[in-house]
Length: 123
Image (cartoon, rainbow, N blue to C red; front, side):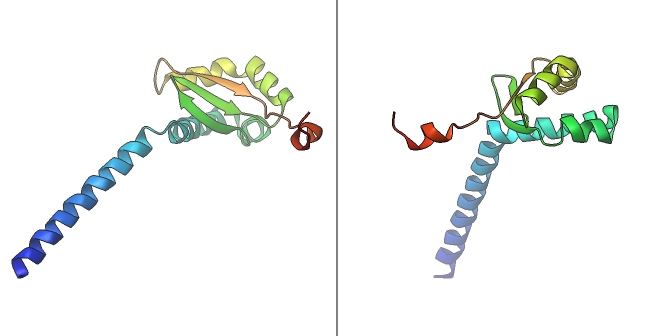
């Protein structure tokens, strides 16, 4: 009976290890997690290059949404912020991204505003 218990424990350990590997591989390929990781690196580099004040004003509240097909999609606080970053910092951000992977690029977008009327009305 002790032998069956050891076999069951061994099978359980193998099953748990297999499942953990599946979870880790899934997370590693998750486009949201990839976006967070890539943006975290770039954001720290921007802070170092541009300084705390510029970083706080333009990049601190930028949210990484997804990294898919080699494009990092980033959401800014406003339309103005997205336009300003695209005009003044896009090249710098893309160069920093290319240090991670030479094929990466990014887009800064503004949050979509929800029209209160359309939210509650069907017409």
